[in-house]
Image (cartoon, rainbow, N blue to C red; front, side, top):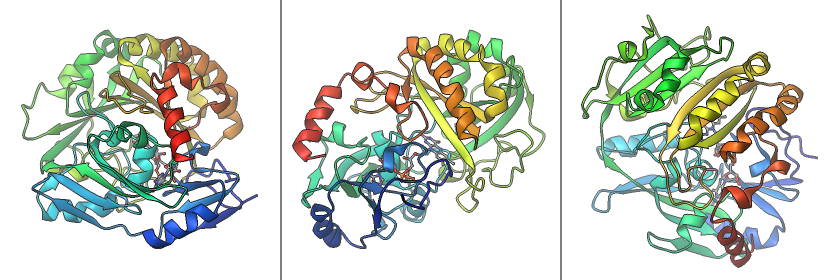
Length: 403
Ligand SMILES: Cc1cc2nc3c(=O)[nH]c(=O)nc-3n(C[C@H](O)[C@H](O)[C@H](O)COP(=O)(O)OP(=O)(O)OC[C@H]3O[C@@H](n4cnc5c(N)ncnc54)[C@H](O)[C@@H]3O)c2cc1C
């Protein structure tokens, strides 16, 4: 067995070998020779989605350039690029992405392959920014799926099953600034009474709780674009108190890695992630899980989880509740429905987490909750065909691509 682990340290990869091609041409020669294989991005997933009994194909040494075509409104990024690599080119051309995840250190190709998302009622997952995709398939052929290609909605959230993405085009828009405001000690009952009013307080809103007190959210982070109407004062609207200084999402932890708060405007890329690109948010000793809850069921599902608070709290660093807009991508957690993400950052206690998952998943099952592909869930219990209406089309795509 391999000695290599993922970033979080909760899993040791089963892959027998790691290869690290440096060019698309080398990748094309290599893939048909490997047998079972899977792309490996920046190793930030917590599930076995990037693992294989065969060979992992690291993208770490693939080209990672980024270039904006302003006329077409797209940013072309290469397969090895991380979100933090894109910022100089976007700044240089006065352009921006619609949203980012909490961490800028992840690769673009790896993020979209699992349906990674940020928060925002009107904002789709990062995969929805993809307008074209270039993939080297397992047969070594380089395929380009442009806008309108019938396979594109199936191939963006690919779980790494179709080959190795070597370039992606992402939709861009004119640059904008964002403020970030933190409110503490927010009563949960009032939030659940009108969740829509809370999640629409900003362009992107995140609710944090440790579940130590099941009646109170420790923090609510409200991110607002300065080019949109400001809306009500967040602390007043939430019935909480404004934070009196910078905060980390986990109460009591040093806020140095967190992006700037306090309502000070700054470039979109410096406020939308929770963590700064020039800091590592932690040493990577953690486990994450997340379920995407169809929005009509979200409040009932959150109430059901609240009933487990005493079992969750001892295992948790923090829980984040956020929103993602519906899309038409076959394997997206938001496929066909707006969703509320219930994210859990656990302590690095694999046995403790494994012990609570059956109860947690049983509470969520009546609400058609979809697990995040890149985070820990009971993979053996997943009824994907029931949760994803396009599952049969995905199986057909896999067959056609030899995945
Ligand atoms: C601290 C932290 C914060 C996080 N925050 C968020 C968040 O805010 N929102 C969220 O939704 N998720 C979040 N995640 C989860 C993370 O975004 C996903 O697991 C993401 O897929 C990781 O990307 P990666 O580049 O590390 O890819 P890996 O974990 O290495 O791989 C993930 C998948 O992508 C595939 N893949 C990688 N590269 C390619 C390629 N070039 N072509 C084809 N397939 C490829 C792999 O085969 C695998 O299936 C977070 C994770 C961490 C550790």
